Each structure stands twice: as C-alpha cells, then as structure tokens.
Image (cartoon, rainbow, N blue to C red):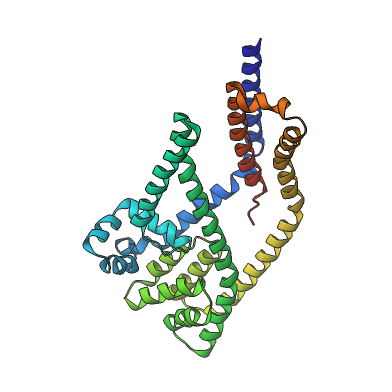
Length: 323
C-alpha cells in the first residue's frame, strides 16, 4: 500500500508540473524568447566585423600577463569565465577563480565528510559550492546591469548635449566615460579605447552590447549604426530613445509595485514550513526526533529540500515580469 501511495504521489507531482508548464508557458517563456531575439540582433549588428570580434582590450589584457598566466587564461574556459566576471564587475583573473574554487570544493568535501561521515553528502558538496558561486555571479551581474540601465538614460542626455555642441562621436563616448560614474563610465571608456585602436564602429558597439546585454543598448546601437549609414539628426534620435527608456522604467516600477503582493506571498509560503518545524521542535522535541534521526526521515527531508528549492525557483520565475 505504501509503494502504491508513493507511486501515486510521484505521478500526481509530475502531472501537476506538466500541466502548470503547459498553462504558464507564455509567461515563463518570455525571458528566453527575448534573450534569443536580443542575441540574434546583436549577431546581425556585428556581422560585418566577425574577423575582429575578439576585443582588442582582451588581447591587450593577455599581453600584460606572464607566459604561464597567459597560457592559463587564453582558452575557452578562461575566456568564458572572464566574460562572466567582467559582466559582474569583478576584476578577478579566471585561473585564480578556478584555483580558489577547487580549494573551496576540496576543503568543503573534507569538512562535510568529517562532520557527517556520509559519502553521498561529500559528493554533493561540489554541486553546492559551484551552484553558490554561480548564484553569486548571477546576482552581481543583474545588479550591475540594472545600475547600468539606470545610468544609461543620463548617459544619453550627456551624449545629446555633446552632439549639440559639435563634438565628434568618439569624443562623445569619451565625455560619458569622464562625466558618468561606474559602471557606465568603465564600459564607455572601453568602447572609446577600442574606437581609438581603429576598431570598426559596428564591432565596438557590438562589443559594448555583448558586455551589457540590454534592450536599451541595442536601441542605441541601432540608432547610431543607421545614422552613420543614412545620415540624420543623431541628437534628436537619442532624445527620443531617452524618453522611451524613461517611460519603460516608469512602467517597470508600476509592475514591481503591483507584484509586491505576489512576492510577499512567496516569502510567506517558503517560511511557513520552517516556522512550523521550529515550533514543533521547541514544543515537543520527541515528536519531531524520528524525522531527524531515522533514515526514512532524513530521506524525506532531502526530498522536501529539493522540492522547496524547485518551488522557490518556479515562483521566482513567475514573478519576474519582463517589460
């Protein structure tokens, strides 16, 4: 009977997940579709300069390293990790990050094995450490990109004023790098250096968008590229883009206010099991002890932790409304 009940619960859980995924696919798939469209459009912008796609700043960075460090950095893993660290605003060397991750994993595995005497828990440690590092990088990247987009509106105003004065586009990028705070000053400074190195304008702007994947940057790239090819008043175009972005921010703040109740409900749903468990443990420890001491109880706790994590990620995904 217990086996039939377990099988029934598993089938019920799978059915609920499949049905909810089918119903909510339009809401949850918006971010993925937008990212694919953004990536495709960025590739079109940089299509004319594929040979120079590797940033000269990356080459200059590698030239400053020792031969051993260059060998460790100049590979697909080092380039991928360096790109992730750069997007997060962390000035760390990729090979040092890998080294410290390995040290952390080995130390954590030894500590977990010593504390729990469990081989399974020890082999789960690398996944937890790498997952925690990935979440840390993602949070830093999102915060930095959000700050970049907030500053980008003011940067458009600075560029518009510089264009009206009569500055060339290269000097406009330099003025943003000198007058604005980080991170936007750093990014526009990199673009200014690339333009001075002789990189094509399309490639330099595409590199800017690759480092800061944003709809606002994509609109700016398109406006500058079209203006350079067909002519027109770039200052007026930047003013219109600035107004559109400001309207988008107002809508985002309104959506965030309207979804505050949903976020609070998510926190309550996630905290109720922990509060209930703590109250039961404090009021009647003998009642809850079999769940902690028996093998079946520990298995149930492991499954519960996995399902709660999946539920937290699912709720977080539903509440992330893209504007």
